[in-house]
Image (cartoon, rainbow, N blue to C red; front, side, top):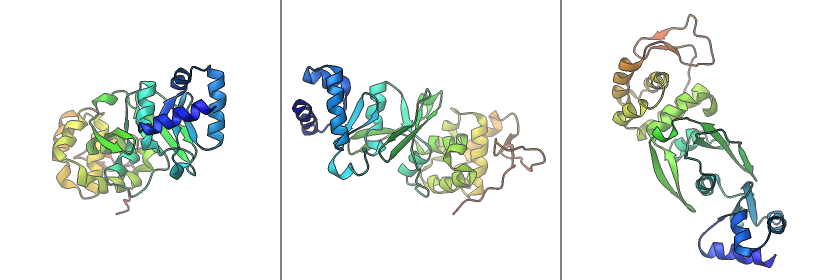
Length: 261
């Protein structure tokens, strides 16, 4: 369908690398089945990719071997298309804030409702659910295709602890926190901890002190003293019976943590 190639050329002239099946049908005045056949042909040639049904990206030559645009170049547009609040989270957010010790295998995104992971060419995206997502502070970062919302360093630190199983485990979380700490504001960390379960702040305070970031936790300590009502296990997946306690953070130290510093 020559009309489809012209449509994509017009998009590129406007600096757009994302389009939907519905937009294509409207622009070409063609039926859905005809447009889908043409899209499949372009996809087979490596000209476009489809991260999600109905949502397509145009692949410049430098990304055709990858089989998709990098995730940061289409996730904001995809989330707008599906009408889903989001922010880049966990190890992906930490990397964007300069804590890139371990590059995540998949781009990690926080959303409000469960979503299937995406595998588009060599690009993988995984979604994690946070019900009070919009209470997390975010920063806007530019990408070659626009801009995206990224969890602030403080929100990232708390989410790393809260979702430690998805961040490579406690050893990796501690390693990332040691790097991320340079970007963390101690006062803002205390404010941010108000938006998450008290247990996250307790575990985070313990881990930050473990990696020597004592100056970052004063406000967090005040909050924990006020909010924490019970001892929580450092690793919630392990038993805490007989584990030594951190009196300051009300944490049962039921796991040995070794940060790669």
